[in-house]
Image (tube, rainbow, N blue to C red; front, side):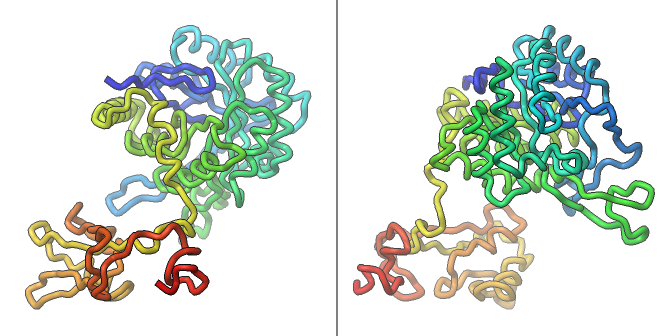
Length: 434
């Protein structure tokens, strides 16, 4: 069977599934339940030194649902822990003592002053924790105090604090990055320049999920007022995957360990993060939606998939897809594919026809008896019909191999070109005369 054990910057865990720093990791009771359910590690909810952290006593989450009320995303306005620092430290030490084989990483956020970091790091180290995660991503509440995303949006601050921590502690330093920035590569480079052992991303996205049209206040609403918060859950996964890939293929940060965060709900989500360069994944919203035992499905699913594919370790999966991530200009513009409809599977709903006829290329015909067929001479293989069809695999795209007739032109499909520079349709191309 596949070996799911993880060694992330020297932090060992029985599997690559960690709980992210969030409400589920706020206290000993929760973390013990999580470890008993099978989680490989946790990042303890962010600790600080400010005794004036007070969370609202009311709604802390806004939500986005799918049509079936499946939770797609949460907007969170909860701050870092409001429990006393000494209580958290005592509980961290007790849990690590009783679960020595699990990863125990502690998230930290203190003012951007060297002395503040030098004071808190020895206290965390004394608990026996395996590492620290610097919370440079929280977009609400703490950023107004000059912490969280206020630090993560300034690469110079990231490098400075990471260096302070590396000079002060024996523990591996993971820098948690904010997605609320134009180019994620710059903060990642700064973390590396400061000596950080790894980065984790993404933290939550600045957001307002909805507005109550009766009270005219954003949700969640506190006494008639609302605030921006941090968006997380399945809806943010595409953004997280892209940012992970940007770091994994950047020449200046290539090879830097990455802990992937953002919408991991199933084993497949985790495998995608691993394939794009992550060494492990962190989960929050899925646990808050389904409970801690959801990790058991993640473990069994990932293990079974790895067995089927012949992967023997998590490290063997990590980064496999990175070489296939490229810039648009390097895509093969001579690649041709056509939509194909399985008539036996078609339920005649007409979604493909409506979408293509109204908003795409008018490449699907509808007969009087509602039989839908593809017009090859109009189809550009855009995939819209595949995505709107409610029946899985009813519509598929069929690539045309070199030498196949392109029914749009009646000409044979030519071998692919490396990029736009050499493509015949480019007037500046040296092959334009072909």
